[in-house]
Structures are given as C-alpha cells and as structure tokens.
Length: 89
Image (cartoon, rainbow, N blue to C red; front, top):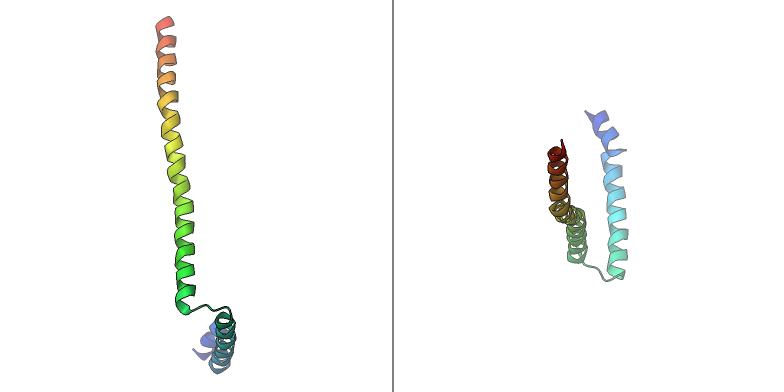
C-alpha cells in the first residue's frame, strides 16, 4: 500500500506535503501581490467555464438556426423539383 501511495504522490507523503506547502505560499504571495483574492480566482474560473459553455453550445444553437433557415428554402425546392420530375414521366 505504501508503494502505491508513494507512486501516486510522486514521492514520500511528507516530502510532497512540504513541497505543496511551499508552492502554495509562493503562489499565494504572487496572487496577493497582484491583489487577487481567492474569491477573484474562483470567480474567474466560473466565468471562464461559463464562457466556454456558451461559446460551444451557442455555436450549436447558431448552426441549428442556420440549418432551419436553409431548410425552409431547400426542402420545398427539393420537393417541388421531385414532383415536377415525377410529373414528366
């Protein structure tokens, strides 16, 4: 079990915890220097995910709108051309 934890963490648990603490302090210092709060970071992540969601599914919505708009012309023309072709036989 200890080997599995060591492999998962990439080192001994105490060493990994120590590195995470040091990196957290360094990142916290930099974010404080930039005048960012934890709320600002979480808000930025949430807004980024919302933007990505709207961009991805907004594109699908626009594509579906264009499909319906084009189909309103293409399908009747297709049906009329088929009916005219059948009428000639």
